[in-house]
Length: 243
Image 1 (tube, one colour):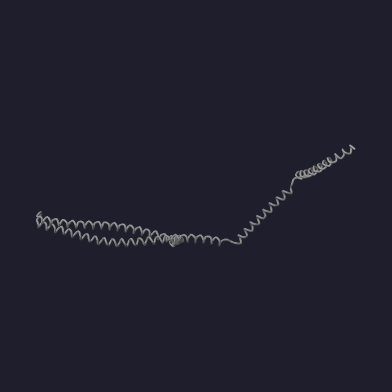
Image 2 (tube, one colour; image 1 turned 60 degrees about the vertical axis):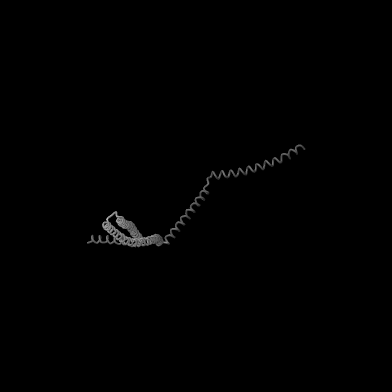
């Protein structure tokens, strides 16, 4: 029993999935357009066949018309030849009568075909009008299908964004940002501490060299001043000795 229940549920699930696809307005519209284009092609094929039939009918009408005219001309020639004595009058009358009968038969066929041709013309006009209307409808549906597809895509994107936003926890996001800020502040403070330590841990040699340099600079300045003083005193001493 459980096996058959599982089979039923699988079939039910597939049926629902198929129903969802069928009810998709975009797919439904596109399928409708494909059906209309197929009908349009059938109508165009039928129109071409009707026009070809009309062309053949007109050609046959012209043929029967020419035949009727030809039989009439032959009947007149028979009578003319009879009047000239070139043909027996009874024979000429009989043949002329047969020719006129052929003429009437061809005229009848011509008129029947002409009537059929008028019916074909009416059918062609109706088909042409339907085809034009179908083309307009297809163009309109294609425009609506493009708009519907764009709206469906935008709606789907909006739904996804709204879904993501609804799933975001604002408190957790703020907490995460605060933790990042705290971590950055700790790293900056740690970097500053290392800088201060590096400045405090100067080697003794550096301090000694710095002190010597400072003292040497002071000694040099004192020596220079003393030399200048001596230079000034020497001329005065020489003058005293001369006296």
